[in-house]
View 1 (cartoon, rainbow, N blue to C red):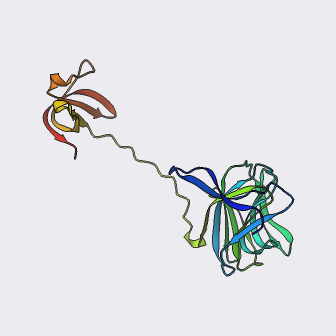
View 2 (cartoon, rainbow, N blue to C red):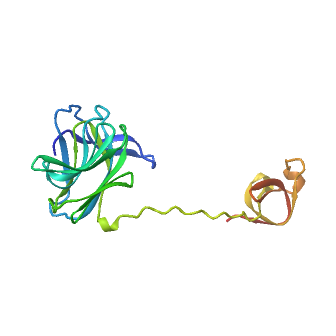
View 3 (cartoon, helix red, strand yellow):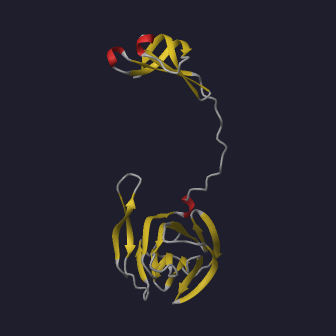
Length: 240
């Protein structure tokens, strides 16, 4: 590990708990800061992470790495210059680009994924594959992340490349017509009980129903999404 890597809070999760991220907090862009995990024996896998480039300098590198042995030997998928991605490798401190493209980004989370499977290396952004290349330089290694500025990591996941979930195919949601239903509220002695009423429903012409006029049972009928207030003469069944 190199750099000021710490666990810190970045907003709140949907659960209402603090969202904790791994952050590199050194604002200097004079050095490269790395962190790695896993086993040097790992061969085929996909490493995925939510990456938030630092607001202090978006032109600096935010680099997801696979088959990592040290900062100068690994495959890389990186964001740089505020609007570019690169897929390539560092071998003996020499950089080789396999593919590159455009991806305008800000200091917010994007999901990057890098897959190494045999001699095939592929990369994706937000579940969209952007490049695939072939290279046999590195056979195994850890996962890693490198940045040249402040940066955050979240939701880091390592899976077998064969176990990745396929992108779901859009399907047409069937349209259904709501079944007519009568939902009722009974108010004996002022205590409300919800339930249903099997009997004859009579819409209210005034749009309002007084409990005393209907024996304490007010009902709403739903037909094709239209709600109608009224009364129901029949058997009231409370909800469980």
